[in-house]
Length: 64
Image (cartoon, rainbow, N blue to C red; front, side, top):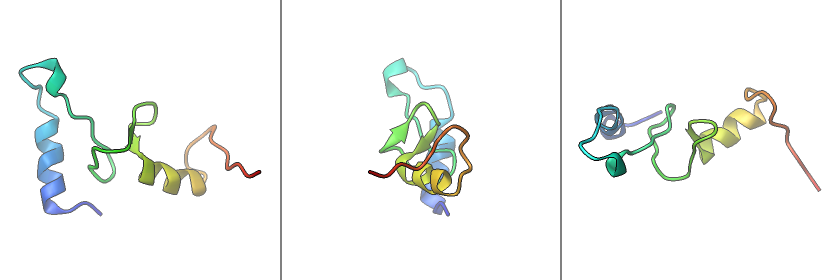
């Protein structure tokens, strides 16, 4: 699912940075850094896929 460039960037982001403000949090599934949800450690796109499949406990699909 992740490209080679995303894989390299996600591996580089796992090393401890020199300054704490340089920490880049990435999705563990696809390596995306934008739209990251700290509570689940995944991006919004992967969250939606997993929640739709019922793979995230405690998350229910809502409609109104």
